[in-house]
Image (tube, rainbow, N blue to C red; front, side, top):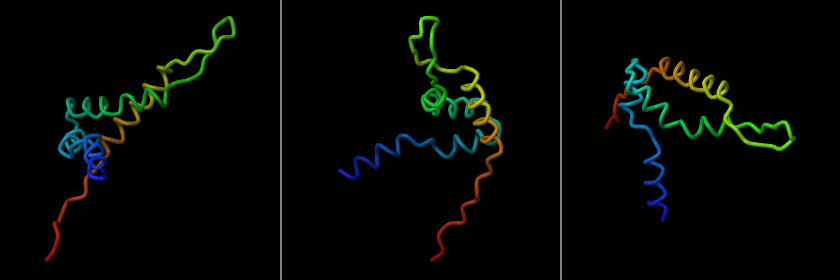
Length: 89
């Protein structure tokens, strides 16, 4: 059962080569990163709003969503992976 959960978690991770390409400025890789975090950003951007009758509605705040996407792109571009040196025997 624990192995099944591990496989499920691995599917949620972005492959390293996409992260590396995005940090180097590859537009398609950046789009893949944004797509990966799209649902999470939408959840963070959801706000409770009220209409003229006082009824509440949950909506995605587009300004906040764009700000979060911009921050993600900026952090992705500034990311520098640490070189892997391998395991010494």
